[in-house]
Amino acid sequence: MKNVVVTGSAGFIGGYVVQELLDKGYNVIGVDNFSKYGEVTHTYDSHPNYQLVVGDVQDTDLMVDVLKDADHFIAGAAMIGGISYFHAYAYDLLATNERIIASSCDAAIKVMPKGRLEKVTYLSSSMVFESTDRWPSVEGDERKVAPPLSSYGFQKLAVEYFAHAAWDQYKIPYTILRPFNCVGIGERRAAGDVEIHSGNVTLAMSHVVPDLVQKIVKGQNPVHILGDGSQVRCYTYGGDLARGIVTSLDNPAAKNEDFNISTPVATSVNELVEVIWRKIKGSDVPLAVVNDEAFEYDVQKRIPSVDKARDLLGFEASTSLDEMLDEVIPWIEQAVANGTI
Image: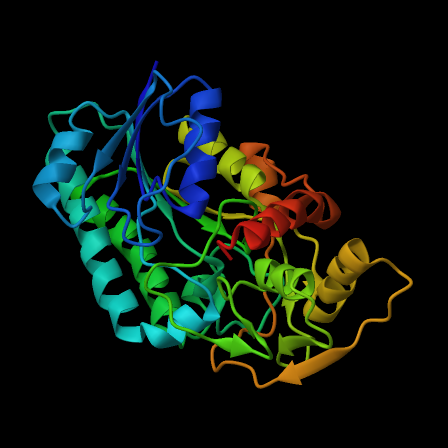
């Protein structure tokens, strides 16, 4: 049974990844300092194959100790949030995330020669394609198109350079995975997030799906959306994303490769709000929308190529947007009722 270290294990995506790993029979050591949400609990906290280390990934000595018996290292820890987060913490996102990834790589470099570590799996982001002028975004485009304008997107591109450089100099094998617009349950407002008002509702996470759901659940009418609603995204279920990440771990085809992990199905914000409205309010109640000024780094189009993940890993994201919403809407309704959103 292999040992997998997951940093950022208490986060939104981390929760899905840890559960998938445990379901697949791995031993998991999670590392998190609860800096984003505060202390949280998960259903797997008492699982016999799960151990949580409460600590900061920037502590390289801690990471060396955690990794000494690891077969795999999923480097997922980062400051991350929605579009308002990009603007409120432009410097901190760059500086803190650089320290996190440098410490992660330093620890792997120290452990690899004498340990059993096989590979580092780096979680990047679709934001590396922030400035692209070609769609769908194909693996390799991130080095051909203009670099990202946001500090978050730029830093995620730097994560990929860390991966390549650690291999070039120290022969640390890697896999780079780029999630696209993850949707699921368990996401909540970040502890340090700023107050952003959208009409009469404060944004919950500044991610479009949960925020549109909570606006409609709270009775906002007309519904406020950022920009003109023509922005296009490919929404990927957290469980599918976790399955793709875990699928890549022991697949030899993933060694020293990068993959977009996403559904290829594109949906505009205007289409999204109509689907959510219909699911919550029904088709008999007319939808009205107000268009608010968009944020500076609100990318207009993100559409990935998913052929490489399908052809090399045998992975395809299979959960439809309807299925995602059928899970997310009741969760947010309950969170609103409990006063947590």
